[in-house]
Every structure is written in structure tokens, then in C-alpha cells.
Image 1 (cartoon, helix red, strand yellow):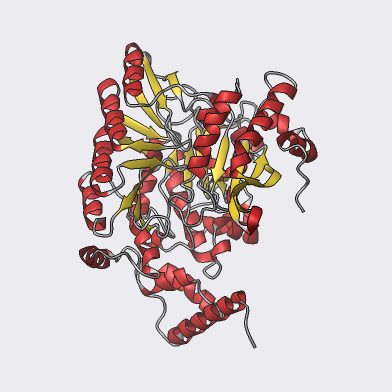
Image 2 (tube, rainbow, N blue to C red):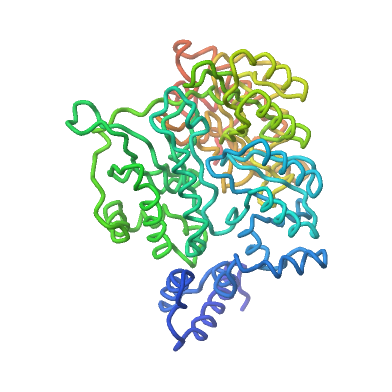
Length: 581
């Protein structure tokens, strides 16, 4: 009898699991030391006769942090890693991006998304000497350098270390770079400067080897209440600064709410745990939650190995009780209704010049074309930051940079220097709102060239639509949703569309009405299988209909689309297109 492909994969995995179980039977318990807790978690699945995912098998055979000799040997031979070694390379931030680019992509760890001018200069040198001559700001306020050759990884990692930078844990089943409010410490409306918390947690992670044995990747963010959102509610853990309401009878000291389980690509925002903790507790609470995830996370099915699914299974109170077992005392309960409302983020605060809390100082949000900077622009941005500010560069989840601590008298000088390098602090509501993942130009999972299509749409819309309010359009290349399409005013999920002559072309499914922060909502699907060549006109019709039919100038695009039935939005976006089956 012939087996289907899915049956073959199942039997292959079962065979691997049984082989490992037989090998483990009768052996000593999990090894002592920090690696033991992940090993013990794997053993619990094996004891139940379940097969580990191949990535778990790879981690069990060789820890991803113990790859230095292999990286050196492969670099000497000019070879890329093979098999699951490619997965383990990601522990060092090195991603082999074949077949789209037969090279490495380097992802950094930049805690809080903040670095100084000297380090940006060092990264420009790495991108020029070993990469493609550019870097991309990611949707996690991070930097990536692409087109690194097979002989370069060791030299790149050594250059990073010499500059005080790291890519350790930037990929694979690790805690990604800790993000925070991009305007922390300079924002007039913020409740708490979260920068020290992000740095403390970053170092706690680096120095705890057991935190590199997670079931899957893990995202953590701090939100201090500033004008530029770090999208904490989309993270596995989001710490939000808050104050008790004045009529609650509780002290007005700043505390942090804890939200967990956010993963919008799987249809969920983070859930409030119902507790209030002091700033000094944040690192300890994060480590306790991570310990529960290590113990309880799925080691057999990668699709369900995120924290959300542990929370779904255990329930909020069960999960909280498990986390408290790793803490010296129970956490203080505080209903969300007993807190003051969070300060509202401003959707245009990441671009342009804005006053800081420090008198006479401004910050400047620089509009980048979907996050990309050439090495010449990287060096110039570093020089502008150092020459007119404090030398600080802040990366945002909106794929741009912020230069802080600029004297009000230097605003025009900064503006002029940016224009000289082909950048600007000014951007239309259309251009400032576009976000796009790497796409098929650099990611094998993507079904479309998202960055190219985003640039085409921006150019078309700036000629045809005059938006007077901020809107956000998120293009993502695959269901992993790195660009978080479901939280955009318009979200676009790449797909392959059947065209004439029985061939396939690049296209998108269209979602509308997503949002974050106080407007958190997942977008609703309006259209399927829109060919990429039709995409700009679909967006033009949606925006044109909004401007013509909104109830008032103050009604946001999200509010407009949320009060419309899907049928009306479908007719507006693509008249005459039948509803997909």
C-alpha cells in the first residue's frame, strides 16, 4: 500500500521518536547543570511515547551555543551549514537564506532597540565588507544584514564582539531582542522610563544558559506609556507601566501590568494576568514565566509550541499559580479596572520632529523606505545623531529610526542633512504607515515580493489619494506574519494566485480593521487572491471610499471599516468581484 506524504512524515517522525526513546530508556536522568531542565522536558514527551520535533532532536544532540568550532570549520572551507546545523546556526543570529539568497542573514540583538553612533558605524562596516551594503530595520525594532558569504561568519561575529554588539540568541528557539518604548526617557507623556528594565532583562537572559532551551522563539516587550507604541500586546510577555486609579484607594505608585500569550499571527493578543508588580519585579517575573514555558511548552508540534497554547491549556489562574512557584511570594492581584487608562500612543509620532520632555530638545523620526538603509546612510545617520544630538539611534517597530536630544535650534540643519542622503523626517500619511516583511526577495517562506509591491503601492497611492489621517498598511509574505498583517488598518497576506494559462502569480488576501493598543482588534478578511498588479487600485478604492463616506473627519479608517458589513467593504474594494467560496 502507498502512503500519503503526510502519513510518510508522521511515520518518519514516529520512528525518530521511538529510536530516541529506546536510546534514552534506562539512562541516567537529565544532565546536571543549566541544560538539564530542557532535557527533562523532552524526556517527559518521550516517556509518553511521543516523537520530538526534529529541531528538538537537534538541540538534544548538540546545544546551539556550542557551535563555534563548526562555524569556524565551515567558514574555513567556504561551506554553508547542512541539515539541522542550519537551524542551530541561528543561535548565533546567522540564517542561511537559500534558496532565495545563497548567503547568510545576520540578525542582531539590540536591547530596547537603542544603539549609539559608534555601533551603527561598526555595523555599516560589517554590511559593506561582508554583506550586501545595506541593513534593514525589522518589525521588532532590530537590525538585519544580508548577503553575507559562507567564509565570513566568524569574522562577522568577531567584529560584533569587538564593537560591543551581539547576535547571540537572535534566532531559533530563543528569546528575541528585548524591545521597549522607542521614546523611553524622552517622551513627555510616558509613565516610566523602561530602558533600565530592558537592559537588566537582556543581561539576565544572556547569563542564563537554561533560557536557550525553549520550545520555540519568545518575544518580550516593555511599554512605558510613550507616544510610539512598542506593540507590547503582540508579545509573549508584555510589561505595561500603569498607575492605580485615583478612586481605587490604592497607592499611586507606578507598577506594571503583565500580559502574556500575544501572537497575532495565531489570532491572539496578550491576555492581562490580573496582577500588578513593581518595576524591580519585572525581571524575576519574566524568568518565572519562561521557566513554566520551558516545562510546559510543546516539544513535538512546532505549530503549537508557543506560549499561547500553554496558556490555553492551563488557563490564566493555573498558569499564574505555576509561575508563582518560581517566585518567593505570590503576586499582588489588581483588576485592570482599578487602573488609570493607559496613555494613548500617537500613530504619527514615529516620524517628524517632536518636543522631548527635556526643555529645548527634540527628537526626529526619520522615514526609511520600508526599513532599508544603505551603508552610506547608516554612517550619515550616525554622524547626524552624534553631531546634533546625543549620538543615540532608536529603532522602532514601524521600521524607521529616531534621533534624540536634538537642540531646537538645529532642526533645520538636521532636516537638510537628511535630504542630502536621500532621507527625510517628513512623510505622507501613506508612506509613514507602510510596513513590510522581507518577502520573497530574501525569505523562502514568502509567497510574494512584499517590499517591491509595497513601494509600488506607495508610489501609486501618493499620486491618487490625499489622506489627512494616519493609516497603516502591513504586507506580510506568509502566515508567520512577521509584519503582523492582522493589526494593520489594512493587512495584506501574500499568496499564490491562479492566473491564465494555468500558471500562478503573486497576490494577496486583504484584511481590514485591525488595530493595536486601545484599538486592538484583528482585521477581517475582505478579499482573497488579489493579483499583485491589482493591489494598488484596491487600496485606492478603499481609501477613496473611506474619505468619501466617513461620518466625520475624526472617524478613523478602523472605525469606518468596523461599522461596515463585509459585503459593503468587498463591493467598495473590488466592485463586481464575487465572494470567495
